[in-house]
Image 1 (cartoon, rainbow, N blue to C red):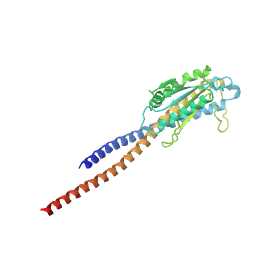
Image 2 (tube, helix red, strand yellow):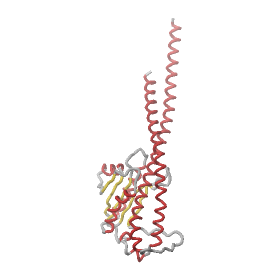
Image 3 (tube, helix red, strand yellow):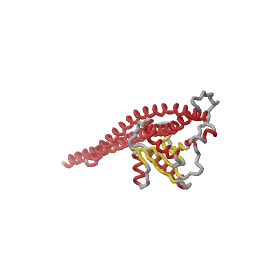
Image 4 (cartoon, rainbow, N blue to C red):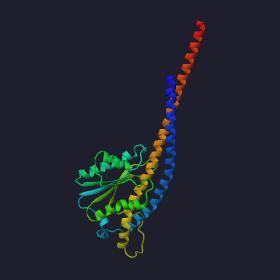
Length: 285
């Protein structure tokens, strides 16, 4: 029963694969809850920063702050791409890489030199494979980003922007809407675009002054934008991996049903053949 032994071997292999994908689905579900909590915790702080800057902003003040400086012409830009360190997440990283390549293509077609900065093994591995230059890379952040990581990533870019060596800084990340919706997104974080004021302006008692407050808040606003991109991408990665592993587990279950039916048919056919041979032998005797 060579065919039956082969089918039993395949059934055992698929069962082992299904156990692995099911375990990975459960792990991603657990990590996703913590990642969602980080996303939810980061949003109120970002809204509060945006509201204060929107209330303090004025065209007159904007001329005093380099982070608000709008470039006359786009000659050099930086693109910060955030991907994951691990795969098995469907098209999650491929979509982010494609978004970054399209952004780089648009910038270069407009005549700007664009430097690429990559976070995550998947993005770094891809651009190294195609031989594209990478200005800097980080693979040590993982799926639990901290505010310090955002500062390390963007402080140097802010310095280059203030010094006039960069005209714009973009971040490409997965915007977390839900576990099933994490579209790749490209946001310009420098120069800082004045947030839209929502509702009536608040009446602040400013101390020491609006200039001093904006001096402190604008770098925080930029760092927070990068931190939110990190935590949303981390949450999106877990959501995409959970979805991919659930699909793999379901497909393995369907494959097992087909293999088991095929095995049972083959076994029944063999038994029928053996009975027929026994009956035929008895009749011959």
